[in-house]
Amino acid sequence: MAVIKVTTADFENVVLKSDKPVLVDFNADWCGPCKMLAPLLEEIAAARDDIKVVSVNVDDEGALAAQFGISSIPCLIAFKDGAETKRSIGFRGKGAIEELLR
Image 1 (cartoon, rainbow, N blue to C red):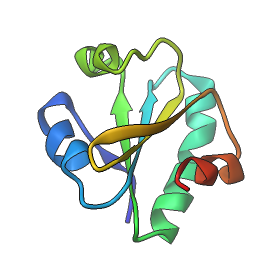
Image 2: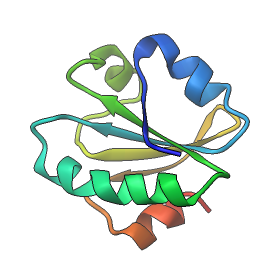
Image 3: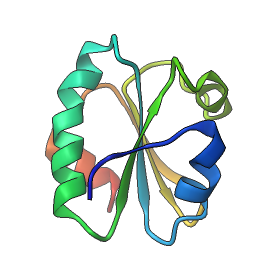
Image 4: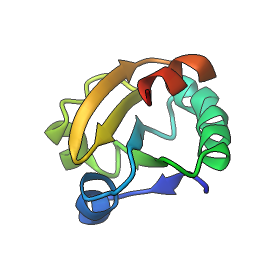
């Protein structure tokens, strides 16, 4: 499965009502560390069927970023059963990203 781009309109259905754990990547096109993180997230999304990996562009979805208190990017938030379980700010390696999903 690929990384899914989500907007405010579909965030609730795709993330909060998901039957699988979801890793949300809050990012922006101009963010260097976000660009470095993207291929790792694609790898994880492709390798795992038991989770969803989604991407939220904070410039396009400011209300969503504000709702979750995003002040620095990249920011990864893991959700399970509609609730935030873990959060990580800044670039992380693949192992640290997978740790968020445990």
